[in-house]
Image (cartoon, helix red, strand yellow):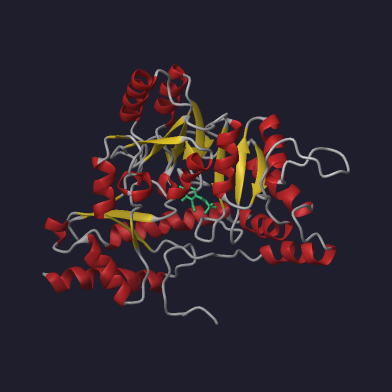
Length: 381
Ligand SMILES: Cc1ncc(COP(=O)(O)O)c(C=O)c1O
């Protein structure tokens, strides 16, 4: 079955051309398992880019799981996390038997609100007798969070920081790349990300010991020696050498992908300028947004149609779009988690739309999307 060629997807995989050669070399040399030259090279090449140690894994979620374990998170520890994110940011907290504490977003970046973070740490320290063990900070939709303020608050209270950069590879905070803004973090190469290995992720760290431990845990924590002896519990989390080949090819086009995604966003901004009430996600002054997803909020009173009307209009034209993430404090799974604020995240979810943003979108695809948006708004006038 081939894909429906007329459908416009939200963020489909986009190969650059070199991937297949790396994948072919894995087949030709029979390095088809979770060891091999592509894995070593992919880790090295990403490591050079980020100035960090990298461990290639089966997913971004597994990188978050291992990273939090490395930070010492265990049963009944509290771990802070923004409410407005994909569930993969917070689920690893549950995997470890720890307790998520959810925090609202700020409007400036849509990311974690430092003022709410401080409030949460002080309140939990008062109520529980100790500060939360760690924070999972998330860079949403390609934009870094307000890291100076966040790191200052966390370090003042002894809270470890884990960086979920799954959506923000290629973004910066000042001169520092996303992924290198905390001692340990995660990237995702899921099929919808800015570069993909079809499914995969990476643990990023400034610590050689952490990288070594992550490699150990991700391969079932097998102790040295010929016998399959295990002292610690591990996981089957390593990336395959075949998929690492795809990642190597994709990494060669990462900068071009960022440029294209930013250009697509600019096309939306200029093409939608005439529509009052469609407001772009802001770009915060501290860094460079990749515009992994082009995201807007809808002011229904000004625009005359709702966010859901736009999604519906696009769907009828065979174009995929989606709401901004449903915050964790509105999820049944996290109903018992303490939450600090929540109104900003709820509002962004209620009014936010992610438009098709794949770097393979053509100019005529963009014309088609813009025309449907204008028609949907016009039909309601
Ligand atoms: C913010 C965020 N964190 C974590 C993940 C998890 O990555 P993966 O799907 O590779 O497990 C994703 C994407 O899927 C994500 O968007």
